Image (cartoon, rainbow, N blue to C red):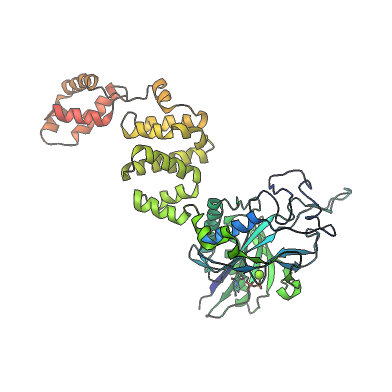
Length: 476
Ligand code: ADP
Ligand code: MG
């Protein structure tokens, strides 16, 4: 009998706001200097009072509207009590009974809730070195303390590591599309925790929570590892302990961190320093206003690219994943006409040529944006060959400039002057009479040879489509 994995995800994302969740200190995730964006409120000095950041609430509610969740009418903030040096108040302000959003669905996964809380400070534990006075100590940077943090919890309905990875990627894309978070996992702006259990029947097994996952790849690897570990424990007659485990990236395995505390240990209670919120009383927080504020969502864009432009799902995905690509794609298609073949050519140049050059570290699309559609126009109208277009693209991505000027300077324009080509064709015909006879005798493929000779004579500058047309006319 096979074991089925059951996975529920808890994902935190740092929100992009001007200031922190409950005070005026700046929310600057790129600050390198420790402890500069701090104030008496986020340092928890006695007598200070928190004030709710409306921008942060708005971000979470828009995410809620995008996943078609239920937007709370009434909501409040709670204190989650525990001690740790990264949490100066001795509690974290979070939400317990009344999250901002309930239900909803993303990437086919049912959501439980989305709530808002504050981030903790960042601790760095210095390794122990004999003879070094500072070694083995911990340093704390409170710049991060109090940054608005969204927490999204899914139902235990994910059944594979791949599905969990797909979900996390889709959430990242949604957060970026909404401008709610940059959601870089490597920077800790988005953090995934996976709850994992296995079972042979429809009952739930004991779950283990895995933390410290720093990339999408690690989400998948950690779940695969943990499922295999749990199977091994059960198969050898052992029991799964409900615990929190960490993901060790170097060793590619999970390890036990602590036995999980239950929610009773946190003594949640409504924060008496903060007002209760009646969200429906605030015009921009009403569901219709939130929905009206949404941009085109990733899944809508995917659908549009496939149904309107006939793109295959892989190209559509690449464009949707990278806003720079989709913007350039749409601009070019708008200028060149939105016929499917044009859209496909533009998409191909972006997803194979531009992506290939960028991945190899050879320039950036940004450098070429002003003349990318000019280049596409030259390709589509047959002014340059696809080989020539690739050469121009490589130059544009590094140094920018005008596609037309580069084609001129490099002699990449195809000869489209019928008079000039006609002379070449006459020469080819006289020099290859035997092949010409084959063609006129019915051997269609002989034409390719003649076109090849014409290209050679023009030193590659002839427009092959035009050569073909002229050969056909002359040999009628
Ligand atoms: P806790 O109180 O231990 O934090 P929750 O009920 O809040 O547990 O659930 C936390 C996460 O664990 C959710 O994402 C949920 O989907 C997931 N989860 C709950 N039960 C299981 C299970 N048996 N196996 C895997 N994940 C589970
Ligand atoms: Mg929980």
